[in-house]
Image 1 (cartoon, rainbow over the protein chains, first blue to last red):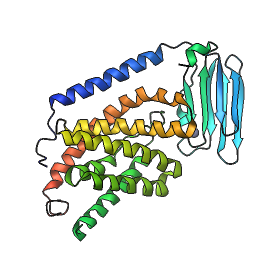
Image 2 (cartoon, rainbow over the protein chains, first blue to last red):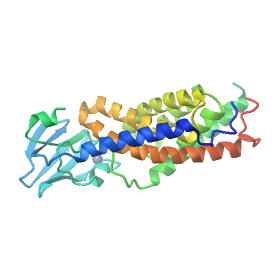
Image 3 (cartoon, each protein chain N blue to C red):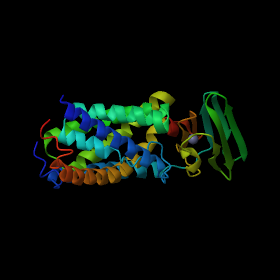
Length: 124
Length: 170
Ligand SMILES: [Zn+2]
């Protein structure tokens, strides 16, 4: 294969980049248009638990096999306060409160999702 | 395969591992699971453009598995492989059409890599909500993919004719 022109932009590039950006923009707008959630669902290897978002509290998941996570609910937001996972992505994640938003700790298999009372909105 | 080719691919694999290591040292600013700059993808692109799909695939698998054992852990291997397979398949197909620049090939590779990782995460976590991250990952994949593609293109052009890395006598 001749490689002399692979660095040149072609017409097809523009279409595919524009399509990707449009798709992402629409998806981001859909996500942003959500309303505040009512409670959170915490899923871990220990099972599934629900906690109300309007009540400040601390949730600790200490599972010998999958590690330690400390989730905090305060002022209507939920955040991952501490985790012993290697990448610390969940701890760096911004606090969330909108319906459908979530904080994930993949290494420890911990999944926090904000849910609204209106089931119809969350189940789609 | 000639011994020379095997040696060159071995050196490229090492380069890929070094780049994976360098990337693991860069603090991640974006708190999105699956976000990656994809530095070591320069090596994959190099093999894809100067060798062939199969060799690019092999290099990708070895790179993910070895860097997983060396730096990032078993779960990174699972996600890396899922992403890598999507990435190589899509990039090979797009490159074959000859309609796209290397930047776009790399960009679609990055986006499909992210998508593959989300699919793997979905299988592990059994939670559809994980796909919420896809829009953001499309944006980050577009930026990092175009950039890495451009860098790869420059590297390929520079090294294509050098005696050490040329694939001309493969
Ligand atoms: Zn974590």
